[in-house]
Image 1 (cartoon, rainbow, N blue to C red):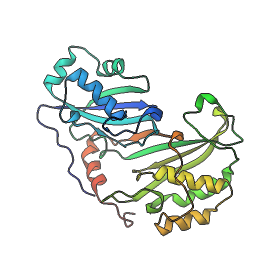
Image 2 (cartoon, rainbow, N blue to C red):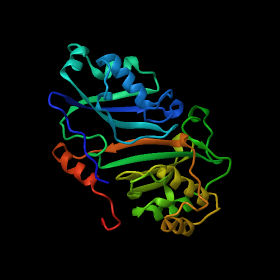
Image 3 (tube, rainbow, N blue to C red):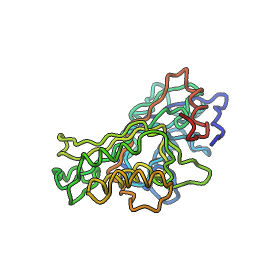
Length: 288
């Protein structure tokens, strides 16, 4: 769906902010009245540093995460005026200043001045997520209780790997996402891996990389793979559900604690503008 991209007003400077957060105690990314959200915390701290902003500093995010979902690497951009930057003072580090005010479950990794063509959401080439599962064959580490889905039964890794291949490529993921008005569910899943991480107690890690993800898409896919791994469905069942484009199937959306956004990719600086145009092109199953 084509949308107007935010234009940088003369005199403003655009900054890219890379950050990470533990999503356990947040009601998601997006700012919401009376709820603790990641965006709300970031805006609150920026208001203290730069003064109140009616536009929330033009903040845009690479990907909105749901309640309980973590981010090892999230990206946003903000636009700051000379007057706002002056409040920071000379030789003040935006990253250090923000981190001194943020709670420990949100950390700013780096802050970089970027050209006006950069857009945290539309200039992104891909997102990568990881979902972590501790089944009955895994070592149950209580220190990772906030970051794994805990299951009391074993999962067949090979069966899950076989089923995961059904999702690769360009598909309409309507059956494995929560539709939004005027938004397409066509996505290109470029990579999906299912493996055990022995260093973390033999947990199962499912990594997915796509141009973008529809709402609940990752957790819906993981739910299907768990059902296959438990022997209660087959790869053919997964293929049938995907092809149906209907949510009338037995696969459930898994809980958020095992999910983390781990990477957002961007092209070279000279290609920001062209990538924005590509992203805004309405996806079609003919886009091969």
